[in-house]
Length: 270
Image (cartoon, rainbow, N blue to C red; front, side):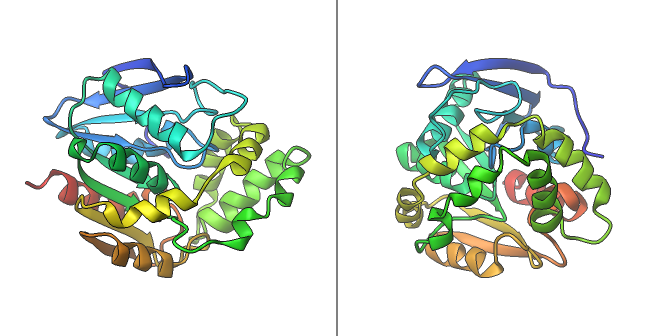
């Protein structure tokens, strides 16, 4: 089961466009770690294992992405710049001047924009199963499939979590737990987001990111190939790759016993 630790504080930060972003603060250590949400299909609850591991020594901030959890659900405004503004609003609401970032899958794109606009605020990055389109992907521009989500949202969520995310053996319980979280989201948000996303700008800015970066990737990821993680590491100025043997797309959720020691060592060791 994903732990659900109780936050020391919580609130709602107004983002640049007025959308309320629900945030949660844990621990109280000197170092701060901000967890940047991935696809708006899940909310901050999925980071429970990592919050539990880091909150003993650091201040940990999580937040629900716009369109999910307790955050606002605007009818539009789901491109990466809006997500970067949301992260900035959470940091500002908590008075954070410097932080490290943890991303998962596509949220590295958000982090790239965030850091590019204010590099002095960020210390380190952990990117789990990162997806950045270093070269245009024809499939990402094919949004015809999105129109079917409204008719079978629950079926899509189950298939996606089972076949693309948690492909490790004996993952049924994890799939069921994350599916229950994901079904709080709506297909309308996902359809809008996929139509709005501009993948080009983060890809261009990636080589300018100089923060020390740890990329963690499952070597059996069925959603994002290891070759993409390797390419991202090659483009970044100061990055290294750690592979999780047998790991799927979200080893932080499925196999935290392998991911959390890497996180704590990289983020909290001076």
